[in-house]
Each structure stands twice: as C-alpha cells, then as structure tokens.
Image (cartoon, rainbow, N blue to C red; front, side, top):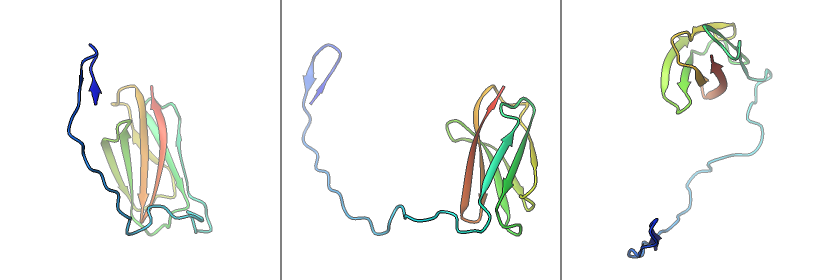
Length: 119
C-alpha cells in the first residue's frame, strides 16, 4: 500500500520475494594484510590547491600499480599507471572544482582509498 501527499492510497498486487543461499563467502574474518610491511596511503597537502603528493608504502615493488582520482560519486576523473609506487607521486589537481575527492590505489588484488579536499 502506498499513500501520496494528499492522503490518497493505492494497493498493488503482492510480489513474491525469495532469498537463496550464497555460493561463496562475501567476507572472511582474520587478517586482511598478510605482508610483513603494513599498507599505507597518504596524500598531502590536505586540503590541496595545485599539487597533491601521493605516498604509498607496503606494496610489492615489482607489481604495476594504478592511481585513480575519483569524484565523491565514484566517477574516475584521472588515472596514472606506475611501476615505482613506493615513492611519492605528484598529481596536478589545479583544474578540479573545489570539493571532496578520493585517491584510489590498486596493486595486484589490494586496493587503498584516501579522501582529500580540493580548495
């Protein structure tokens, strides 16, 4: 049954819903990072105006990495592919509108996110 702003109601036909079992586990307990070095992602300055310094530690040096700049709604604005991720990477953010954005770093099966503010 649904009621509108004027108090008028209407009833639709019933809809059957069934829930089945999941074939694989969606989440697993235990440690998420099994490497000796903990993964970390930092961005500075935060808030940023022109250049954003992105620093990632703990990923294997020989894996190819992807750094993406995302809008607050998840739209990819810019992507950088890097083979030397464990040092500072600079990204020019001067053309962005003021607001909240995310940096997403992918390396192998691992993904890190960090929020920053563009002023």
